[in-house]
Length: 230
Image 1 (cartoon, rainbow, N blue to C red):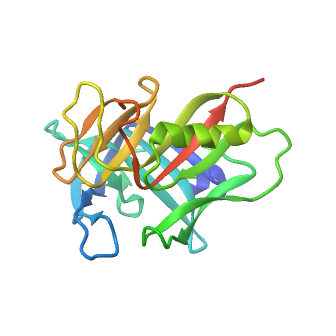
Image 2 (cartoon, helix red, strand yellow):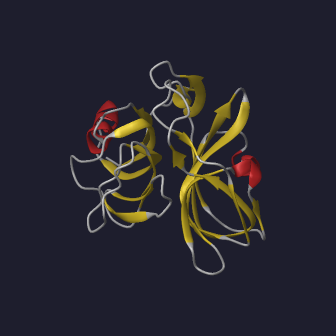
């Protein structure tokens, strides 16, 4: 990932990527009173395929770090979703992916007093004369589509595409049984506007269009908004 973007911040769209080893976690109940939720133990799959995933590439403690959510499947077809550990996942062959490289901003981690987590936050890197994208982090308890609209309002231009991942309080998607866990891992997809993949504590992923007004951010939601040309 780092070699592909030369150290810049970026978003990666990953589809049908073959892996030799894939390691991931899901959301899980909190282990203490200081966090709303935590992570499950690691699951390691051999010869799995990343069916759909997205990755924000930024920096943590001065080093390159990828935040990756998505959906993957085993050779027998069993599907999983969650938070992929990029440093413990290895491809079985080279694969071409779509990348949006950022100029002027990137994500860097910082401790967050409200949630108790170390989270990505957007930082300015260089001046940009005519922005064509917005990088944003939506805070807890914000309804997701309202948070996206606030981020878009900073640019004053209409949004063409939204890329993003994060956590919601449960997840309510059209045509799917609602997830009621206090925290779910979510990836926005391009299947249709406001569509997503989500997974809760039990581990069974759901996908579909988010029901308007029913999905609030749990810990954070990191978005890249691609603006419509004027």
